[in-house]
Image (tube, rainbow, N blue to C red):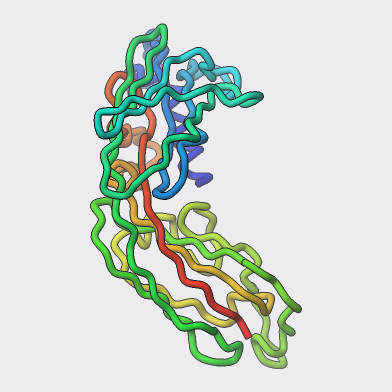
Length: 276
């Protein structure tokens, strides 16, 4: 997610004002633009939807300073409109605990501010069916996770610890003279960290249907979960279009009308296994 946030900050600073590649020419007049960022997760209420504005390229981006806490934010589904409420002590964030997201439904977002109206929509994908063995044996074969499903945006994955037990001795992991990374960072897709599982940027597994975890990627015995998130088209388009030459500054595909940002959805299934 760090790279996502970095790219967002870059475009928030640009204010989507056109600029020339010639270093001696003016960047043009700054035009403040509405920015939205919201992720709907199947089975969960609406929370953490952010509304703000872009800032001049010459300024340091400050999320709180750019936040808009007086916007009218609504999400419509099945002909019913839900108004989101500002989150206390979190400038620019909105929530609606009564709206539980469902796979297969389309949700329409409307954000009304003094700058106009920004709209977006997302159709929540169906969660994939994830399967894997009940245990990974240290010193044994790799643990293979597979999944089936349909998605327009692809998949991202994440591994999390559920219950950590004693630390695995290095000699058990890698042999008497071995060594290496033990898997202390339990994140792949949504965290966008380059750990021993990911080995690449977060969109590497967008069209994948399986993943193998090696015993050497774990530092502790215990119980772990491995989740696979099916992404909607908005999220998939954003990730793919963001994989570009950062010097080119081509605008990612946002799928937001009247503003910029990302209004996306996802649905997950997971498998729980023991490392023993």
